[in-house]
Length: 94
Image 1 (tube, rainbow, N blue to C red):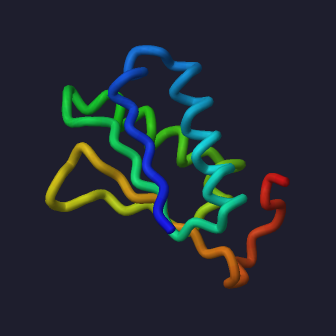
Image 2 (spheres, one colour; image 1 turned 135 degrees about the vertical axis):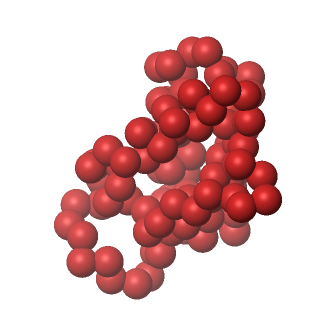
């Protein structure tokens, strides 16, 4: 299962972006999705940097396996999850 979050509509509303990102991460964990596609868009790159900073927070980073930047479309990121493999990380945020 893959979930998708397009941030184009809320690109200039910081708190809504954080809420949307946390919501899609929580949904991926709940539904055991293998991947979340996040579309910050191409623009100036500021929104993509904000998304990467959000994903790099310690309490968020422990919830997913890895982040992949799309080599063909730099306005898109993939967040990969491992739900059944032990990660060695503690505290799944639940």
